[in-house]
Amino acid sequence: MAHFDDKAMPFGNKWMDERIGLNTLKRVLNTEYWIPKDINFLWAMGMVLAATFGILVVSGIFLLMYYKPDVNLAFDSVNYTIMSEVGYGWFWRHIHGVGASIVFLIIYIHMFTGIYYGSYKRGRELIWLSGMGLFVAFSAEAFSGYMLPWGQMSYWAGMVITNLFSGGSLEAYGLVEWIRGDYVPGDAYLTRFFMLHVLLIPLAIIGLIVLHFGTLRLPHVNNQEGADIDYKESAELWKAGKKKESKVIPFSPVFLSKDLFVMGVYFIIFFYLVFYNFEFSMDPVNFDPADGLKTPAHIYPEWYFLWSYEILRPFSKDIGLIAFGIAQIAFVFLPFADRSPNVAPAHKRGLFNIWFWVLLIDMIVLTAMGKLPPTDPVFAMIGLVSAVLFLAMGPLLVLITMFEKKIEKGA
Amino acid sequence: MEQQEEGRRDFMGMALGAWAVVGGVGALYAAKRSWDPLPSVKAAGFTTVEMNDKKENELVVEKWRGKPIFILKKSADMEAHDRDVVMNGSRFHVSIGLCTHLGCIPAYQSDNKEFFCACHGGVFDVSGVNSPGLPPPSPLEIPPFRIDGTKLVLGESGPEYKKMLDAGLTV
Image (tube, rainbow over all chains, first blue to last red; front, side):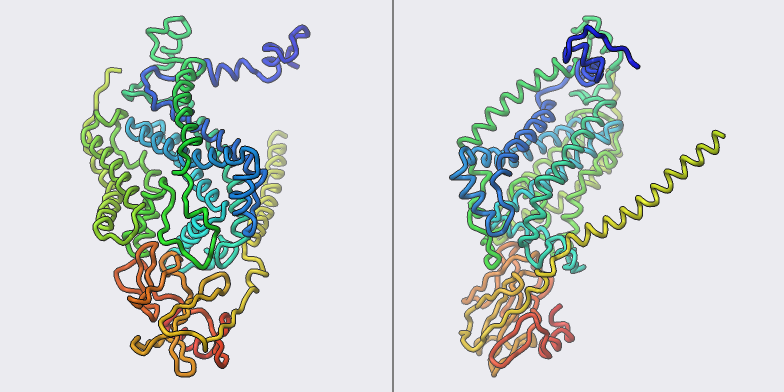
């Protein structure tokens, strides 16, 4: 048996270390987990996301206490019970709604930071792939949560999205009815999406977050120049007290204090939105109870799905579905579509820089067009051009990066 | 000796693994069945509609299996179509009122005499036929029906419905 010190104070540092290896844990996860110095505030988005997820879980727990997953009771349990009877029920709901919207803004910033600095390249592919897994899981979480208030947008978004699984001309309505548990979204549909939203998908998200952190440990976080840092050497310098000469800092407490500063600013904005400007995350159409006999005049998803929705819209049904399918999985292939060996910020990579900004602007244009009604021919044309451009961006990336000049680096 | 032990350990692993596969397949089947529509949902079935009181060029929406059913009595100036349900000399357009693109309910515009879907801009004429070049790939579906005097029974397949089905006018 291992050695246990009789005189160690129960639950003190030594006592804990002898039982669960507390010091090893601290060293591996905090004090000797090295982060490069050459980073900016965009590197804090990961912890901002983790904190936002935490806030969504906590607010969700309180909503869960009064929500009723039943087609006859759901709407009132949200809009009457939680909003006007439960003390501070509005507070949890507004946190949950604003959080669900903002979490996607941060996800997109996090994602585009990774693309800009080439943080998905050799050695870091699994970081990117597990991140894409998280994006899919968060999308499913957002969609299933959107069903729960059982308003008009819940119902019709559910109708349209589940119909996508009929596969166009494949006419797999059996599959659609199986997913719904009914001919149309009904009680069985609501209860199963409730289960997905509060249990299965959150479990998957937690697992994926652990995996995402794990994939980061060996290749380390990227830095602003994409420099290949000798972590062993830099770590020794830091531990020897030569903090100035070292290129790295420990995750905790040094990097974490930077994170906490960014989080502080972020949460000021976040709670400003929760208290004073929450309407953007609460669609007015969803304050009408679900009605299977009346489609709202204009159906659109929340802003974070608009770009992919706009890729579906300008084409005929089958081509639209194929384009939509490609758009959903396109980003997964990024580490393999980028043929250049350079790990460097986009502004040092020539044509890739243009590619990056065109992609970003194209997705913003798609988002704007997706929100507009389908009737205006000019906007429909802009939408079509942007959608075709988006689909062309993948092959273009392969082409551009194949001929990219290798950057010689001193670092 | 060592080899023999290894063989026995492998056997335990394989025996448990094989049974786990059997159990896993069984559990998957149970999971699939749990997601199936309930018998009560499937049985909820038939809607009977009185057709005598319908007015020309005025859309009536009935409900069948949770879906909206369009019933439109055609006026004399509307073109006849094989998809029409003919009852006592009157022609009716009867269809499931869900756009064949992604299932929104198109709105009937009585002055244009067409159905317009606000979701993605699909258009159907008074016979439920989709305008070409727009997202909907096929005409509005006709629900199974049986003519019973002046009444229409939805959910049962009468000879008129079977004829339409055979002619490929609906799916």
